[in-house]
Image 1 (spheres, one colour):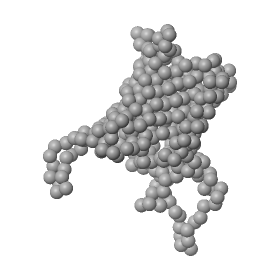
Image 2 (image 1 turned 90 degrees about the vertical axis):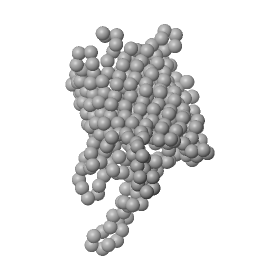
Image 3 (image 1 turned 60 degrees about the horizontal axis):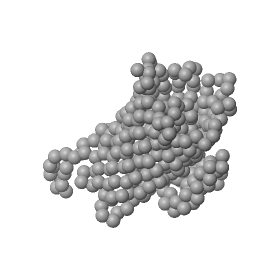
Image 4 (image 1 turned 90 degrees about the horizontal axis):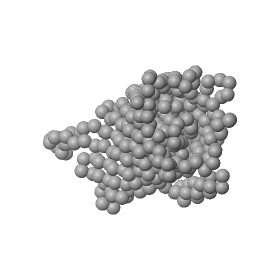
Length: 348
């Protein structure tokens, strides 16, 4: 318990120290580290979960969920993103008697092929672009309820002749009360730096973030609710596109419609919130739904009704394999599709 309190104090101090660098959007490098990988996570709207049920696909995003029951589990994930872009990961867990349980994973994003062209339009072949991260995750139980975990990430980024190497660390703490079916996780993600830059002297910050996750499974109904709070290191994460302002004009008077202070506060608060729910009629089958308010506000089209910001998916077990699918509605232009397969090699 005392160790958990010390960890939380370290999180708060780090948040205060790093607040001057707390920017969102395209201001950081290695942004692929913030993408959801697991179909289960994506279906519930966020990029991590606070659910401790020995699911190896959650460990890459929240290392404090790692348990010895994950040993010899293997998971592969593929995401059909947009255009020719795809990404995913492969993860494997192994327990050691004296060292504990480790989860190793390889995370990648492939941006596809591009055509070389000079300013006059003359072409000369093609090139590819991609980014990779090798992760080692580890967790330790402090007592029957509290666990600490960390990820060490080695990162490589390649864009034509521009390359960068870096490293990052995730720190996480989880409180899990089995009797009350309640779990909470607090995390600091992507603490690190570039070791080499795309161009000499051009240092870029990593997408550091503090997150809090809560989940509660009902005792007498087959539902688990999830609440995720993102970017706790910065209050205002609103993005105003100068080319597409969200200022509304009254069509009758032509005057700008001003928001109330309460509406502005509510909007800023909700941009940190992601809500999700799982319907679990059986341990071998479940249905998932999620809603990401920030994604909806940034990607919706004012003139068209849509389900942008919503996500859904399902998971089921077939023989020795657990399969998951998610559909994330990113924009009117289309959705992204997530496919995850997991198994325990010990069962073969």
